[in-house]
Amino acid sequence: MSLDLDRKSSIIATPSVEDPELGTPLSEEELRKVQRRIDLRILPWLCITYLVMRIDINNVSNAAIMNIEQGHGIKKQLNLSPQQWNWVISCFFYPYAALEPISTLLMKRTTPSFWIGRIMITWGIIVCCVGAVQNYGGLITCRVLLGAAEAGYYPCVIYYLAFWFRPEELALRIAAFYSFGQVSGFVGGFLAFAVSYADGRLAGWRWLFIIEGIPAILMGVATLFILPDYPQTAKFLSERERATVIGRLSSDAPTKESKTWDTPQVIRLVSDPSFWSFSAVWFCHAVGGFGLSYVLPTVIYELAFVLLNLLGWLIQRHYWNPFRVAMGLEFTNIICCIILLTVKVPVVRYLSLLVATATAGSVYPVLWPNRVEASRGTTAAGMSIGITNAIAQFIFSTTYGPTYKVSFSVCVGLLAGSILAIAISGALLGRLRNHRAQIESPDETTKADSS
Image 1 (cartoon, one colour):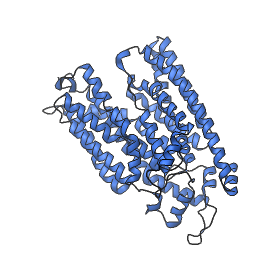
Image 2: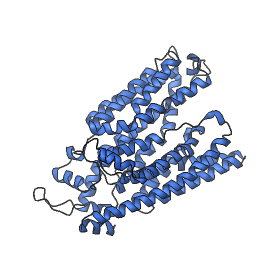
Image 3: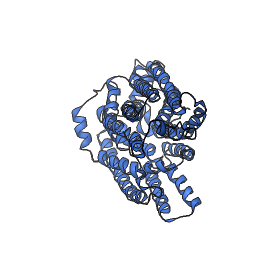
Image 4: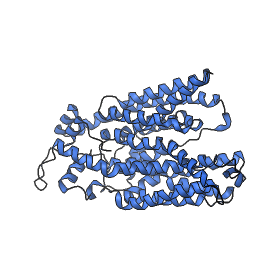
């Protein structure tokens, strides 16, 4: 799962100043080999753990339809009304969204391996506990605690990668990571189907939570030992390699030595127009784009897996502009929503849903590297990543089903707002890049211009 750097970023990333103690800087070929080792060390593990996380988040939906024919369904055994079930689904997202910024900063306060491992161990234990609940109150309590436990995992990973890579190198890496979550519905559905045959003295849905919670606990413990924390402490890199990885990062990149909380950085963050424009993109797309996913069969996310990795590769190779790609994806979503509002032919409607699912799941990963780039400083990066991801939590209300005309109409308006916010964010980031180029040394400015 090695993700090679493109030629341009390799050239501009190599330090040009020779350190007498460390020897000559790494050559372009040596740098690529180091990047491959870093990728192989951290990315496969992060991708697998993210797949487990998404399975655990979505398993409550699979549990709802397990062993209904045998009379052992979760809703019947716990005597849940439709309104109570809606609260079971939605209560997860409130603590999840509220605690994400705090959790992201706590990763820096501790260490990435400890904090990400802690998140996994905690959520695994709580998922197992869901298998023992006896009533509505117990289920709500576990779901709220699960939201609090899982809060911060995704933004922590994005924040963690910013300690290792430059923003222009993140597109394909984030796409690969994110795409594993896209196939979680298929994997989770298959597991639920298999576990349903274990239904007996213990209901199948209880087995599902227990079986799917155990891997998170085991992988969380393993994360404490497997995941390297920072380039500065990476034992699999030599001193010369560590110096190169650290030296090639921008002056605004988060670093191990920086303070976890820096009030001036937070003030600068909230006063930066790009913070609000990117937040507007995340909010509008969360409602207008991801809302569709709550009325779709999960197996069609396989198309999103392919599209997302293809877009990540094209953007990292500098073939396509990420802002133009994101705007194109949102425009495609608008067309799909209009088709769903006006066309009654089932085949056409299903194809529209298929396309909308793939494009909606690709917008965030496409823009994440630019969101990281717009954040200046360790605290600002952690806060902006945590807050931005928290905004994205939304539930597509079933009140307007089965046609969802009101929901699709709202989606069209919000997606149009997302396109406007993306355009503004792109303009603001361009202005920020020009400002940074003006304050860089002549050598660095020359390198940036050559890219």
